[in-house]
Length: 117
Image (tube, rainbow, N blue to C red; front, top):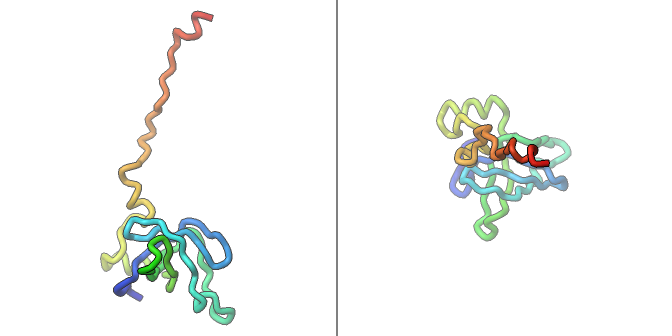
């Protein structure tokens, strides 16, 4: 299922419970997602976990919230990446390129401080 107008791809960051979760949406925002009732139906329940790729429907009246309308399987995610609909990196890493930790220590230790004790 490809995205349509008013929809976007996202990745689950946290599960809150009660059908709610935190979603990193491909437009660069983190939103509170609500799992739609059709995905929670007892007969055809879809289990959504952290780091799953999902299709969300954006709300025009609430910018910080969205509705999860589809969960992609691993095979569907690979297909979307091959066709160029999803980036090769995980969605969460896209927004963090400028904040990468290069492993450099920010503390400096002065050895002379202990000689004056």
